[in-house]
Image 1: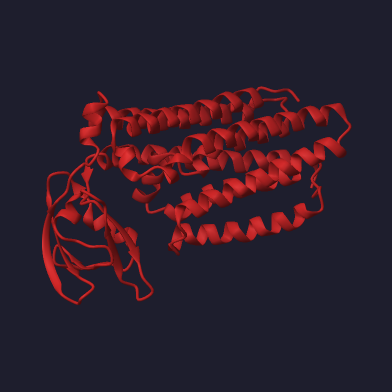
Image 2: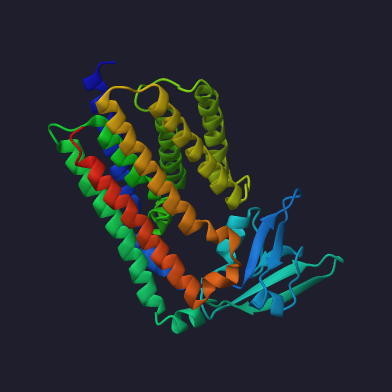
Length: 352
């Protein structure tokens, strides 16, 4: 395939991805605002080997106060038999804050009981302590989502319509700008895809983005697997990506912390491969300069992700319902998008 063919093929793919992200985000505006009005009963859900939905009440929340215990089985919600997946069961249990939901559960001793619980917004007290209202927080997150997608679409249009530009710099910019969407940090895009019944496509787009970023790190800029173990690492990444997509669409329930750590490890290995290539094999000044940009962009984005989102797996869930946790999450989102935008803009405007 000729270089111009590669460039135009890349532009078509980029344009389709940008279009999908834009459509998903616009479709998700209304669901996004409604989602902030939903309340829960304070329970985690899982599915056991028998296909039963298992309950794990959060300390101090409605479910625990009503007598739900870890390991109880969910039998029905509002008189209807419980669905077979944790995600579906969760959707049945959530609803407008202040409304009641009736559940029937079976305890470990085999006894069944029916409970009526009132849905609540656990972080309302934290919002008040932090000087925010629910509507203000919802609008802030929606504004961040829209800002990210508008910036992504504008820069995409700039690169796609630009006469002379560096394909490699543009590709790097695309991957950096698309990373927040690939990591599912845009609530509006996610909810929009679900509202349109196209979650499988949303999952495919973000999975493809993560795979592209990983392979790009292993192959840039020469298109060969250097060091030699890179080909085996890339093969393992492709296999993991398939598992990841299956988990996203058919819910095989891989814990989220394992998913995050695997992708972090993959990107670290990719940056390590870039460092080895830069030190030992690349001598052409132009390529060395391009590699510097790639390694810098990758390292900064990865560091921002680790420093901002890793605490979500280390700190207790109650922290994120407090005033400090709410502000921590909000500031983290702003920093993450800001880093992506600045790096993406610098790379997209690069001439080499």
